[in-house]
Length: 571
Image (tube, rainbow, N blue to C red; front, side):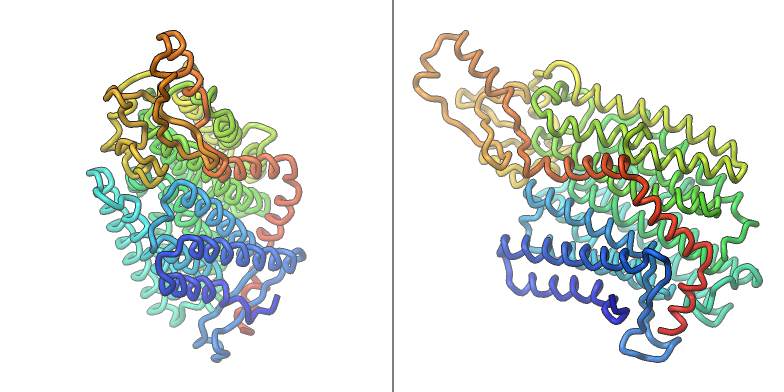
């Protein structure tokens, strides 16, 4: 691929976003425009991977301005891998949003496309100030998507979560901009190629760079600046939670890898700080999940914990460590999205994600249960899934680097992670189907954004998305939706009782109600994203050699940044 085409990763999504705003409320056009743009971007990123199979990098200065003035766009194997996976996750999360009704708003597709432009720009830029700019381009549509999660009346949890999300990210951006200003004041440039290795010889540049790394650590949710994620992410809709989990923190992690590799040249003097902080992140994140009572809160804390694993790779800064860290990063993006999408499908259709309010979902929804089970085992690091390969290679890299304490932490945290996944499995998917009137009605405030009428297009649904009262006025429980039937797209619809059913004896009516209750309510349109990502983690586990090879090439580019720097200098 020509280096001159790199800016199109940013320009095309922005132009499509503007076009979709102009065409107005045409849902089919919006869906085709969004998915078509993302599929094209993923295809282009795959071509980049093929180009970098033997290493190397390409770069382009916007508008052919001379070096130092032009905005530099640069790509190598690490960049290409991130472009592919972030693009795939945007596709599956948009698919989920369309199936659940979250994409019905006229601004959803344009906001996602602007978010994509920001993500792509942040991954491609070789300039710290422009990294700040593209992070802001990511954040502005994210604020809008957060608000769109509650289209009618937001609950207190949603308002508090949105306020925390906006405030924290504004703080992060301010700290990062201060760090960029310090670097420019001390080094006279913010171009990564000109800053290469400078932090190893100039303490002022090292301190300035540390400020930037601290800001990215906040955004990545590293202990002790981690609590915001666990409070903010569950406060929006499942579709947006899954989308943000695969994009925002991962761009911050990418920035930490890139800056430490280029500016600090992997300086070994400071690696012990990273090992300590990232091990604490593993432990505190997994322990935070122990007391949580909703699926998304548990998964959010585990997301924090797994970020510690990912960043341990850069803290080791060996070839094996970087390879394992990059593989872990890509695996985690897919698996965490799968977990959010599978539990999100349950939340959308049944109106709650609280442990104990539902049980026995596996009997009624075997497809979504299998998808969750596969992703959960992968997250815990069991074979033959990609999580096993990720943790095993990271453990080997830690042993090679002499970090035995980190190995012990990883093994213990993996055990607690497995127990937490079993907690969700036993509390939501396993056991007998739960019959409780409370299940139908009590979640109207806590989880309304995940199951508003638009999500399931339920003409007569309560705010929690579960079945409303039957014709006799009696509340139906989740396990007894006698008036709910399954349509072709997985959407529950109201059925009026027939005269024969009304005249039937009580035993016949009970049998009929049981048969209806056993029908799946989550159709393949809604379950498909979780199934696809779960199958991907299985495929990555069975065929791990391919992704490990690509990760190794990316790791070589971080250990030796010569090709990256020369490409930028010649742009």
